[in-house]
Length: 229
Image (cartoon, rainbow, N blue to C red; front, side, top):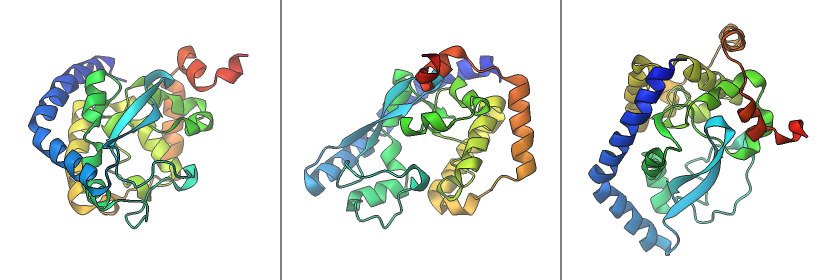
């Protein structure tokens, strides 16, 4: 893990996020007005996610659903485009990932960065094996390696692979590759970039993480407090 580069990217992301808020302010305002005009509901949806070191934070998104109080199945977490709970505006902003733009505020606050593993809900906290905790060595991202290799078309095992791989191998080249592919995903869809992980790849990465990474006690304390009792 290149910690010098990680610190540099955090600093750069702060300034890029601030510039992005200014640049996209007309779009952000237009989306906010459209959401409010459609049904009069709240514009911003915030949800607790697990971030760096296992700490919790509020992740911001434009509201894309009629009701925020829906049952959640972590084994079927992807919301399909034909989901009846999606609003008309919500269906559009989700298709083009516009609903994620409020996370620029998360980047400025230091909760997130632009490129890194996506933050998951705390409901997943108890599912991680020790080797997977390397993903919590970096701030979660607005987009990530898993998102440009299939995202919702991947199974959870593949997502775990890509999250751990990124945390261990973050670099300017990898970030540039993810950034370019993110544009492709927005334009052409996630299924066009699907890349499942082979079993040998998965085993190799798991061994590499165990060889190079030591689980941080503070991270374990945040994710598995019951083990300390």
